[in-house]
Length: 190
Image 1 (tube, helix red, strand yellow):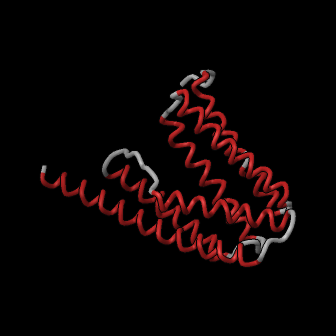
Image 2: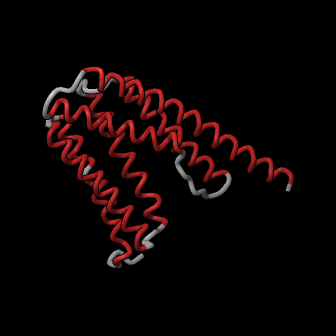
């Protein structure tokens, strides 16, 4: 793979986003929510930029299709764990977010190892869950870094994230289970 090719710009942006995870977590642990919000915003802009470049110029790659969701999940999960560590978020919520992503990851690995490679597409509930997770972090960083917002905002978002996390996790388990059963059934009858 030629890393100097202009087609690799989206992948390089994604790698830079991965490198933002460590400093963002450190800022959360140091309770520098204003700066954490800034880095989280930069990560969001970089995500939009690499997606735009890939779509607009057709600079898609297998590596990019793997790195992009990894970068997104690393940032979100790391922020939830760090937030729970310092009491910004309830520990049970961070555990729920991590457990859902681990179940999805393990399901994908099992599917890949026992059947074949796959192209996963997130469902609308999964996209909504990710949006809710991001909005909750933005609200908490703003609330603790700049000025308080009504308490109900963060509380409502915490429960919305918990519900969408559970529902999207169940949907993935059902979907992967259906795919797996279907593929195994095809192989038995072949």
